Length: 380
Image 1 (spheres, rainbow, N blue to C red):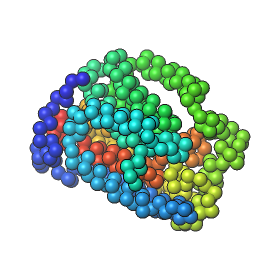
Image 2: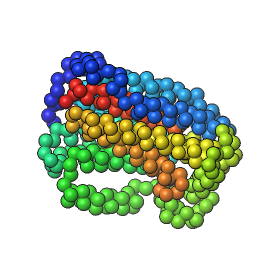
Image 3: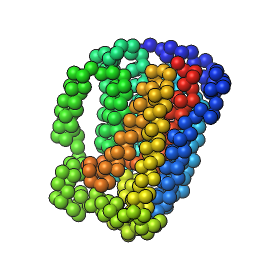
Image 4: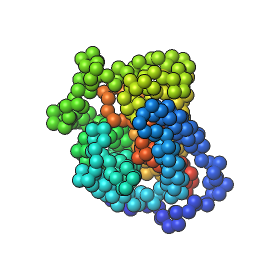
């Protein structure tokens, strides 16, 4: 792997080249505003979703947002070229943490994906997504050809396969799947020959068949079978989606109001503060609330795409594309899942679902994208 071509000396301070262009006025404020507003809406919905639960999750989520904002500012202040130059060791550290989970991690929600440091509990699989994206950007940025060569493509697949395998071993199939849109977006922008795309599609079908036969647990197979036949187990595997559909449909135009949703407040809807937070939003705030959130998600993605289009170096472009692809897929899958269009997996909704590790990841992604755009006149 060739070193990053640009010198990184002094890159921990905000660069002052082309000062007339390189100011805070040049930051993609729309991206930042969307992230902060989404997190704020998430706090309101989590407060309602957990109002009748044995634990009030609002203080924990508020702490996660505060830590996320600090992490965003920290990663924004570091030149992303430094992160690219350190991509291999930080990727290795992320893999080590994933392996450690298999040894001493504890189980929650059917997956053994958590590590504990005293009172602190976190999911290494979330942060590993970001570290993997950084290494992938460096690997693909080193390629000068129009299409990614076979050896480099094999290297890319190996980089992704290791964390995916470890996450699957943790029984977190949804978390493993979320690596695919990230690498797919980066490969499409980097350039992949049509026959390679065809072979990849065929291979994906084969892998899905193998996963179904050997990797899925019985409850995961029940979820997929229930998705294909929603009426087969309405009080068992299909109960969650059934209640979610009722919640979404009952919101109508303006919703039932804050803490007035029957499905959440009467505890008909399980996992209402995590994977099915969108159902609570739809029931209590209706179509207008959902449209507002979708508008903010759209603004975040649109501004991210603008950053990719404006980036002046290949690594920056690829990194933003990978991060935005993963973010967009999270939004699409979660919202489709809660209305029964896709099988139920542990895929949270960015900035809204309860979870400290995922909130940190979302804000770190935001800070990294803002940093790439902020330094576009320097890192060429």
